[in-house]
Length: 168
Image (cartoon, rainbow, N blue to C red):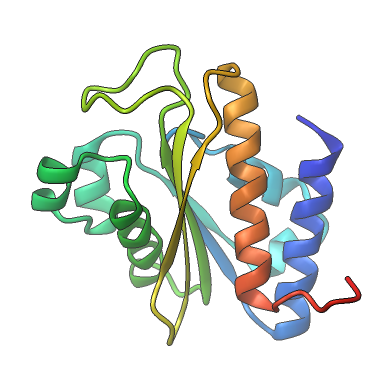
């Protein structure tokens, strides 16, 4: 795991602490890597509530309340699912801000035909509508895709907590 991920986790937790907010995660293709990165950072025991690893469609429905119809019609890797995962993480926890990751790390395309490297990231903050971002990293290797997805999710979470100023 890169030092850059650790620095991003520190940034997220510091911003959360300054804002008096707590965080939670919902992950699929990263299988808990974002949780690991956050839990290793200083301040995790106060600001980080934990996370959901929802690798299958069924578990996304059961643990996070993602719509079965949405999963059936659009598949697990789409912006709408990432938004519902982020919203579901907040709904099923007492945290204030969440980030979600759903995608295809490889080595093969998923059951819905999504290519390796397609990843959708969601972010939600209580009182605001969830947002989602789609990334196409390409077939750059499973570990690299996961690390890039976690980095992008942490950046999105940091922005949701306290938008970066022009000087940062």
